[in-house]
Image (cartoon, rainbow, N blue to C red; front, side, top):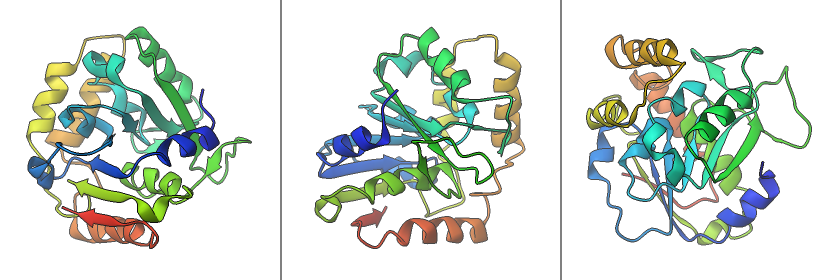
Length: 221
């Protein structure tokens, strides 16, 4: 387990940062000249270099089995959400065990997003979506004003990049959480239940949360 202080030291060494989400503009992703690549949940599958996987939801690791060994960091809550809400029966250990099963050699960074359940020595944050989590860390970096942060598929459209679902199915390995995986795919991609990003109002709110990090040089592509 990595402390958030050490994680911030790592982030602070980076100048050009690419962050990709599931939105349609992730199809415009230019990966040529960044020194850090960050994926929000399954959007990590779009990246040629898979440095950091961010997810509020434990389902975000299901469908990434074939690339888990490539990840340098996985960043998730101590109590990750299941079906969009915190569940005390599930902790980061669910994610950790799944990572270890598929030869993860990177580091995990944990944080608190539930006001009612605060674990000592972890960063506390309010998060609207998995897409805003990383900015809470970047905003603490001493060199934050020198960073160039390019966003793709985040805060620009309610439409998903359809290629992500194809990549999920291609990188999934059937395991004991198969039903949970199928339920997630059905809910997220066939029923389109994603209230934090699938309507214009939620999209506007999510973009505003990110834009409020005024000291960060953020570009929405």
